[in-house]
Picture 1 (cartoon, rainbow, N blue to C red):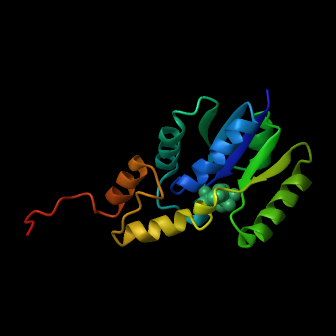
Picture 2 (cartoon, rainbow, N blue to C red):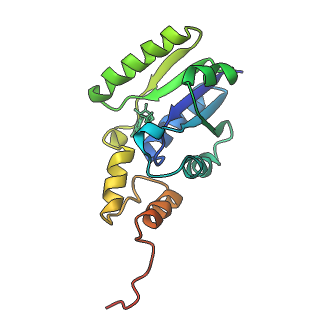
Picture 3 (cartoon, protein in one colour):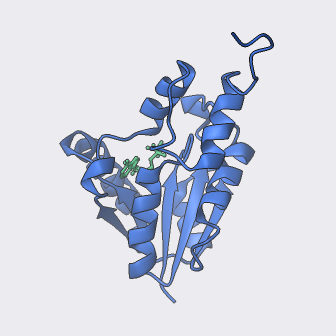
Length: 167
Ligand code: ADP
């Protein structure tokens, strides 16, 4: 059984992440979406909220599961017996960081590979940060994230309340 781990902050999960997950689900027996604590990035959503959003988003894909992890990715990969780590590459701008990360992880443990998947072109401009910025300003993000994530963003930014005195 070949397992791949897709680590990330998923703050929050987007259709770009889900595109990568669906492609990986066709290549591997099992995909574990591993939500990182990412404390240093000061995420908008708590680890539990991010995990819950990912869980709901992948519910319908049989060989995909979601989990949370803290600490070093290489330790987590070993613990779960995975053969590879999956990362998404949107553009050249992602490359330098991802390349460095892959090589550092190999230095820490050379028993697994990092595999890169490119999303559908329509998602190459999409990032969790862009989604948060639009949602913060009250914009519509329904074409970027699943409905339950849309609702969570509206709640977070206080756009979920109906105006008391609509004109
Ligand atoms: P991290 O904080 O680890 O970068 P992210 O949740 O931002 O976590 O991203 C996790 C992985 O998914 C990264 O490899 C990132 O490049 C990739 N990714 C993010 N958005 C997209 C997208 N729209 N299309 C493809 N890959 C993406």
